[in-house]
Length: 333
Image (cartoon, rainbow, N blue to C red; front, side, top):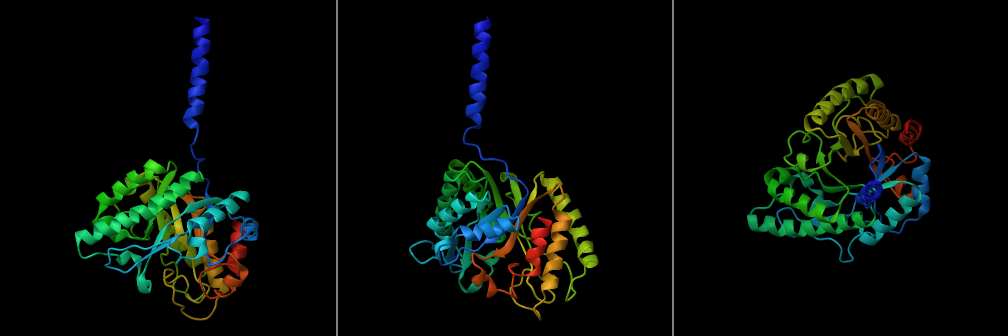
């Protein structure tokens, strides 16, 4: 009887150990950036810079391309920037790991002419099916790469909310297909405002929100105004999180460094003079208001360039690099 008990004990221990084998580590609160996949190979210095800014996660974004209304989705084939190819993404994953930084792959669609991807639509069921077959192959390619690298989180789509509402059965089938090849957590990145209404949240592990909601109509937003705005947003997101019983990740968030950057943060057009203080205040308000909330699992700043030379060309746009907002990140993270 004693021998049987000892044998049973070791069998239980071995069984428990093997059941955990291959599982991804749970994610920590993400202090992340959306890392631009540029035309040239990157080296470790880019990730040392991230580490020095207390960044602990990067979103890597390979793009595919389409014409709105076309049944074709194109990627690969030698026409992409190095940082958006599987080879480039792999190198970035390796460099991130070397500095202890989490990587999440977030495949995206670019519509010809810069048309907002949320308007993606096709005039017939046959075109939808052709497009969805391509998209499934695109997503599974990077889901497999995520599995190979034991990444803890994978994003299955970005801001195609109209498509997700119109054809939820396709998306549920895609999620099942992804789970057959990837065993980490799954997220979808909805456009802000869609976090309550998509039919696929129950099939995912986290609610992803590209958070570009307005926070101020002032040229230089004051902290009082920003904190009042975030008080309302926090109540809203807590209600969403409690209702769906899932934590929220801001899969993108950011502000331009110009006047009125809090008025419509989603816009890529400029509204006035370069204004580093306005951007920095918006960064401070989001980080101070959200990062201690239980419903919030962090997020990814839009956007971060691999080199200082690239970031200098973006001084009046979204990147915080070489600006006051970068100091705010480093201080609060």
